[in-house]
Image (cartoon, rainbow, N blue to C red; front, side, top):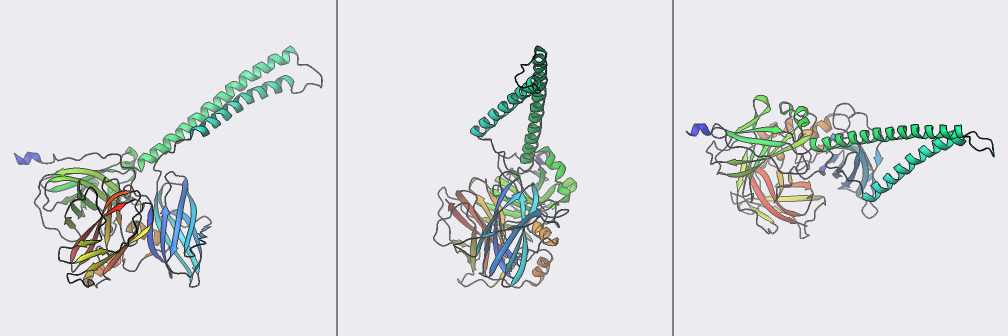
Amino acid sequence: MHRRMIGIFVLVLVAALSVSAHVGSSDVFFEGDAGPYHLYVTVRVPQVIPGIAEIQVRSSSNDVEKIEIVPMRLSGAGSNFPPTPDVAERSKQDPQFFTGSLWLMESGALKVRVSVEGSKGKGELAVPVPAFAQRTLPMERSLSGLLGFLMVFLAVGLVFIAGAAAREGNLEPGETPSPARKRRARIVMVITSVVVLGILFLGKAWWGAEATNYKRTVSFFKPPVAEAELENGNRLVIRAKGQDPEWSKEVKMEDVIPDHNHLMHLFLISAPGMDRLWHLHPERGEGGAFMDDLPSMPAGHYEVLADIVDKAGFPWTLVGQVDLPQTSGKPLQGDDSTWTGPALAAQPSDTKVAQLADGGRIIWEKGNAPLVANTAMVFKFRVEDKDGKPAKDMEPYMGMAGHAEFVSSDMSVFAHIHPAGSVSMAALELASASPGGEATPNGANMQGGMATSMQMTSPSLQPEVSFPYGFPKAGDYRIFVQIKRAGQVQTGVFDARVQ
Ligand SMILES: [Cu+2]
């Protein structure tokens, strides 16, 4: 009888979460080295494309003299031929802080190249920027009224001008138009009216086509749906489905590229409350479906968030939900990890210390200032062993000092952040691979091929990890900070109220 239950636990479509690639969190935060200069870069991506991105660059040293910024395609044609860069303006109050604005003309996987000149010579880095139209801006009523009036005025004016020209165009001074001229003028006015109406009609059709295209782009970039279902007992199968039919044609799950050692990073978060988290790495199977044999998990309702990077280097987060029965499976292995603890309180107070299973602790060096939305910050965490001493057994976890997931209580924000920031490691490799830029993420942050050799030798890391990020909006958040110590992945959980 139970065999019949194969594959009935099903998937659910997603509510209208607004944005993809880090759901609800479109700005880019980056920390890395441009040659000898250590920079923090924030890219505020516009909600409409074409649109203006705001770039903020902070240098950690005061020897930077000039910073130039330019947007380019992440890879492929166009990534080697940048337009003329803009000079970022230096803040008068804070000489280590530079800002600039860049027009982003197209959606897709872009990068912003940052070139630095200073007393230590030149340096360069490239920040991957997933640019996408997030919404359609409505036209203001006053503007549309004014434009409507001007359109009617011009259209009617054109008809009368044509009529007047036919009637009086080459009269001698003092001569009055003959009845024949008047008749011809009327005919000309009728013809002009037809032509003007035709032009207006074509204009409307063109406008409508553009608007439809734009709407399609907006829906193309909405977070794709993770259709999750349980098959054969405890095998979770995840299929991606775009909210727009074009998505599944353009983005092939067969072509996704590995991002810090895995094709997919799957997060199952119990909802509501976020009192359980699983961070798993499904394998790709037939037809682009991803599958993973679940470990033992209690029954419950889970949010499904699955990070992938498409072949162009654009990061997507597939979003779904699944109701799971109690599963009994294999113990976690490799890079898979889990955390269980108290649920997020209705009115959480900021957590500064997270207890770890072995008696150690992670301490958030938060300071006392309240957390404010839309502000770039560096989240610094210190790791202590069970005796309260700086942990000596820190190891890279999937090639990096740590991984952090920032999740809002209503699940409208999900961001998977690394010491190098919100950029996907795969996109960063693409950005660095082409001659357009040389991004070197900060010291603790080894990537790609190095990760493998790091894991073999396992030298210990500094007992601290930091993440550049900014909350996209006010609300309550849970931050999962994941590190690896002596072969064990440990997760410290921090709650935060953001104003
Ligand atoms: Cu990660």
